[in-house]
Image 1 (cartoon, rainbow, N blue to C red):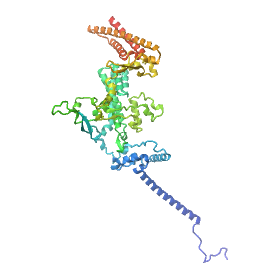
Image 2 (image 1 turned 120 degrees about the vertical axis):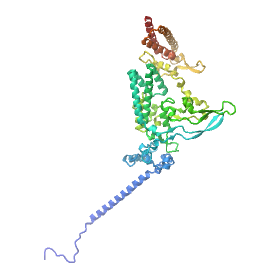
Image 3 (image 1 turned 180 degrees about the vertical axis):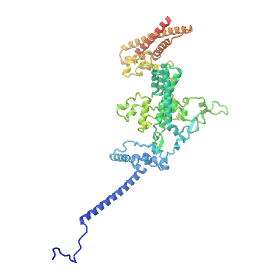
Length: 590
């Protein structure tokens, strides 16, 4: 027999199948792969479904704080008529599926589960790109479309104690293109400003120009700014052409500021959420009023009435018949006739602008809790305001009401026209009838406004924050018999001691004597000058300047009341006396 056994014909063939363990592993891997693919498919389907569901407005409405927003969307023209979804507007084109957008959503989920959601007002934003996409407003048809502001309405008015009904139609026709083509206008305004500035600087010199430029950049209240402009231009004694250019520079500076603010506007600057719930989005007219009326004199600049309004085409009933003659009817007024005669709108409509939209540091502190953010605020000028708008409006999408107090605009209800309150806007604006009425007193208190003096000499009591009410405590009457509050020496005694009563009388006497001497000296010099002019002699320019300096200081002390600042008043009177004595001596020699 061989060493190798022969195979029997009846024996089984050799086993060629893989071992049991590898087959089991393969089935396991197939199962894992199948489960993974199923999870991927189900996950993708879930994500797609979740993406679809969460993009529906119904999902937004499930959150309790979103209820009012959802309700207003449901009957707004965007939602009800055009079927625009929340995500169509609140995500810019191409933004919705980005990682940044998803993280925003996750942050809202985290806020919800942490209990912080709903702690504050939602701050949604709609990008201009969303508005201007194709199929929405990208065709630019809206730019030239005439849009009446307001709705036709019927108004009841009392005429001769009889109620009549009149129909009012909108007098403002709005065009987007007038507000959205600011860039070209801004270039034109900048060029105009630079041309006027160069011409004025050449005419009056650098020193005088710096003073004019400083006052032109003021953002103070209109009455304060106008008073500062008048004082500055008067003190510089500019020629008529130079004065005209100075006033033109001031207007050009503020026009440039207004246009620069327009260049940073977005759709959302004017079109905001409608808190009334009537619409989802509506024009916030307060924004219009802030831009047009803030820091503007009535019917001037951007506040000019006929810039927006058309004069009513119908005649207005003013009052009933002036006579009882048969056939006589009510008295009517035609606005077009009034406009042709250039009657200022403020004569009848001064009450239509109510409120002050100036910004104070308190508004800033709502967002900024560090003093460094308010550096330079008190000294802000047009350049600083321009920077504020670039950072907050263009950069951070701030709305007007975030910083500015609201201004209201519109006619008072006719029923109130006969009430004393109707005249309140005019009565409260003392500066209209009494422009700069207390400017001399202010100059004396602050030690400014004098001629021939280089340094300020403020009243020492200003260091204790003293104001007018500290001294004006005694009730009295003016020459008309109307009540007025006088200042007496008892005010000094009340805060200091009895010795101040005598000191008050001494100061008053000292100022009165110096003022009387100065006025007598001025009269003598005036007679000398008049005699020389009558004889045909030429008066030197230096003499005229010195006399004008003395006259100005004497007038300031006389009208401002020297007791408002005894030390400054005596310095003014001493300067006036020196100038007049010099002139008197020179005239005697000549």
